[in-house]
Amino acid sequence: MDKIYVISCGQDLARMGIDRRRMGVEGLEETEISLDWSSARLVPVVADERVSFLPCESKIVSIRPVTVPAYAMVLRSFYGVNGMGDLNCIGSMKFRPFTEDRVADKAMFYSRIKAAVMKGDLLGQVLVVRGTPKS
Image (cartoon, rainbow, N blue to C red; front, side):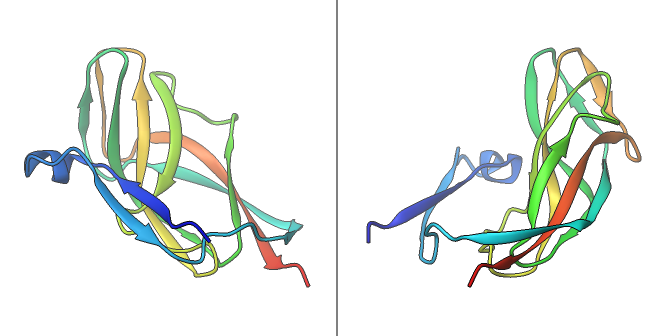
């Protein structure tokens, strides 16, 4: 099987003069899962720091932690969003495989205007849907 590489980016790396980190990982292959929509959670994604934006700028923002169980799927909700921009994704700066419990403490946010996200601001919402490996 060909090796798959995970790319990490962030302001911490940029401050060290590195634009990204590339790391080979194992265990990323196609997996069939069953999703349990009867217990999906709608979770607000809330900024945990103040971050200033220029128009059309994307940045990583620290967020209040969001727990994601092993095999769960995270989907962006288009309801309950931030009017200044769009929540693109959530995750952490350390790669965790889909088969493990994870905690998202970072979000990628895109701003359409010059403004700041303030601590406590709603960036958007996500659906966390539990899953299990399909046997």
